[in-house]
Image (tube, rainbow, N blue to C red):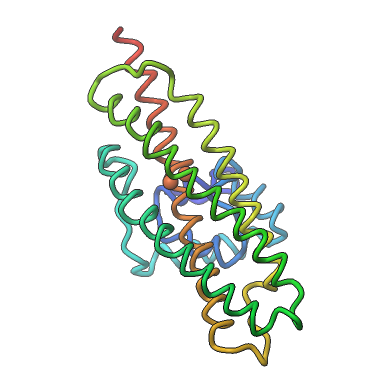
Length: 235
Ligand SMILES: [Fe+2]
Ligand SMILES: [Fe+2]
């Protein structure tokens, strides 16, 4: 696929999932702002379009991390993947990071005051994410599975989808605040091993959440809405 200034971020990553890594490096938000064109996104992130384009092309020619092409797989498989890989990851990782954060705060809390703000943002995001995943698994995902089985849902998927997209925007803002508060996940020179592990864990959490939200916002949700429109034509 031709990379042009007008191509949307969502299309770029759906076509070549490895491009997500380039966007991560440049701080370009391809998950919650997937509808932005590449030129608009570069301008918003304060990076040069030509440089990003060069790196995207370089990433296309390399082997890149293996990621399935979810744009054509059945939606039920994509849902299964999101729950097994991304939801399970969060259910294990969020409590682990909370434990690490408590440990770090006990040792360094007096010298690094931003740890209190970090814990506040992290804990709010944690409870929001746990609730959010329940809503997806209990309400939205079963509706999408029904649509794929050819059964019209009792209500349109548009409403739960717009609620989920709103939650994703909150999460994205919390991640940006965490990145700011940790100075791009940099542990202090005199930080203990737990401090380093916390920074590495938070950075990995950000990358996983970007992938997770991208698969929902840019692939699963638009495909479910399209399926619903197609089904309505046959009723
Ligand atoms: Fe999810
Ligand atoms: Fe979600």
